[in-house]
Length: 373
Ligand SMILES: Cc1ncc(COP(=O)(O)O)c(C=O)c1O
Image 1 (spheres, rainbow, N blue to C red):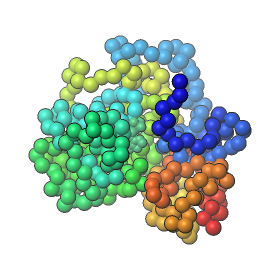
Image 2: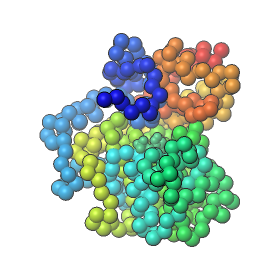
Image 3: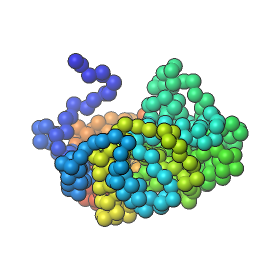
Image 4: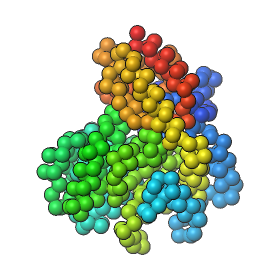
């Protein structure tokens, strides 16, 4: 059987990884400033994470969601404590798209409404509702296109107010747009959405799948705006590579038996991995490290001639390349052995492990300066 060929692949086969570094099957070493799409939060193969997962695997790996699994409760408690959302409830699932799908469904259940407002350049995943709320017609099949979604421009209060009719169930927005090229909602815009949604009995969904889990230097990117949305979706950095996702749900939303569900969500391994991630984030002060290393990197990038529109928060950073330097990403990868991300047409995205240090940053800056010459 052949693989269904949907991914454009680099001809590199990583065989092991440690911290911010990868080694391929030929022993070549690479600096990882992309974290496999913002997934590697605490660094590759962190010893505490490896130990926690191995210990759990030797005890029990899986049973269904019809038994007691105390690890889920421990995870919810630790997540509540570190994120500042102790009074919220946690629904566990397996991926970012599934988290958004469940959040959209919940908002519709709670409000009895159908319409959703999303934003231009948004990416929320590839399941039916999530992809319908994604601003990329190329990946929306006719089957997915029947949802009542209205897209409005980011940071445009007037367009948003016009779209917010009294039949809107949810507004979904990324803490910082990732796939869209590191586009930041203004703090004042998020405050405006929060206020308007409350007044309209609409649920605000903050998609923190890429921007959450400490990536921006706060637990969630929206916490810079000082708001508390009704629903928050998480995945990526949550499991440091173990597939897991979740929805944080405000305390007054009442569940009923069978309202949401999944076979694998919150299984022993996923919970052990997620708990280990939170323990490392706390014990190693990774929010502070992301904030400090992020500021250092942002400042240094701004001082490099030919980097344009340097932007971001913490270790979620984007900058644009001039038209004559569009090969910089492949130059960094193949000549300097540094993984970075991109957003079409000309943005470089940096989403490194939150453990990144100054010497690793210096290696990148030297390579980037050379690539931009
Ligand atoms: C902001 C955001 N939401 C949702 C998703 C979808 O997550 P997943 O690929 O785990 O389904 C992504 C993935 O890139 C994302 O960046």
